Image 1 (cartoon, rainbow, N blue to C red):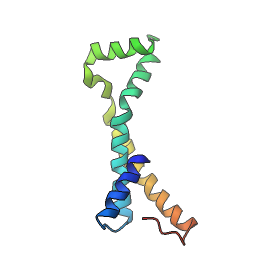
Image 2: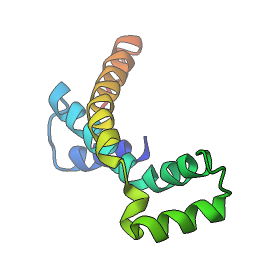
Image 3: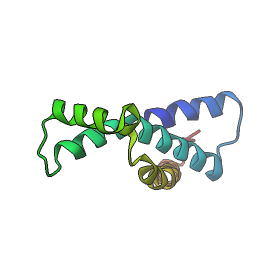
Image 4: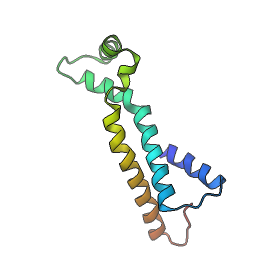
Length: 108
């Protein structure tokens, strides 16, 4: 939501009309930011919950030793595909519903 609001302010500052397409694109970009910002935490959690039952510190060390720093983003391409589309859809629906529920308040 934070990234989306920042993008929304940037679009507004550049006098770009708020359309379904611009809203979808802003939501998709927010989804991309979400993936790359949170993937390391998801990777660590997955490793810690794995069959090995590693603790948090052990999971971090294992990922680092097995894959290097890039290993913390392992699996991000699958999440990226999902959050790219869902981010665009969710924020497009959010803006439309906000307008329908509060037509007197223009959302841009």
